[in-house]
Structure formats: C-alpha cells, structure tokens
Image (cartoon, rainbow, N blue to C red; front, side, top):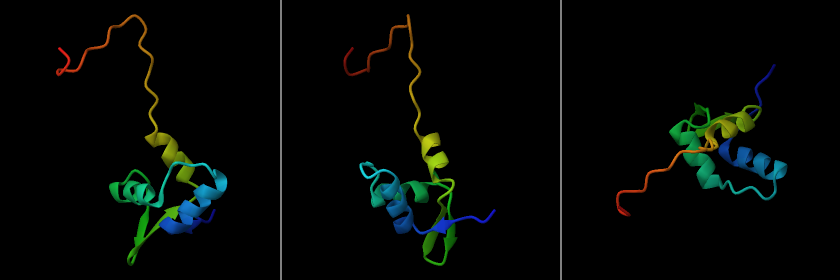
Length: 80
C-alpha cells in the first residue's frame, strides 16, 4: 500500500471536495498539523499529510461529551 501524501493546501482542497460545507480552514488545518493532532512528515519547508489517514485523525480529535444522567454539574467559580 502506497501512502498518498499531500501538502497542507492539497489536503485542504481534498477535505473541501469531500465536504463543501466544512468549517475547517487552511489555517486551522495547519495548526492541527503543527500541534501534532494530524500526523505529518516534514519535507524541507513543507509538511506532508497522508490523506488516507486524515478522516481517522479528525475523528479522534472530536470528543463527544458523555451524557451524565442523575448527576448535578458544578457551577464555575465566578457564578458561585
């Protein structure tokens, strides 16, 4: 299996093709790459992203809160 490596700009275009109404911006994608949320490889000045792993990486960053039934939530300090 050959990795399909793309630059940040090409990866953004790929995401935009898959979902034309995406809220992800090129700047947000770059921040996710620089912070390590999306795995990448540096080649010179460019970061290369395996687009086959992009959906998996993005799904890992989205954390759904688990519903708490029967538990009272704490109020922030400034409200008390």
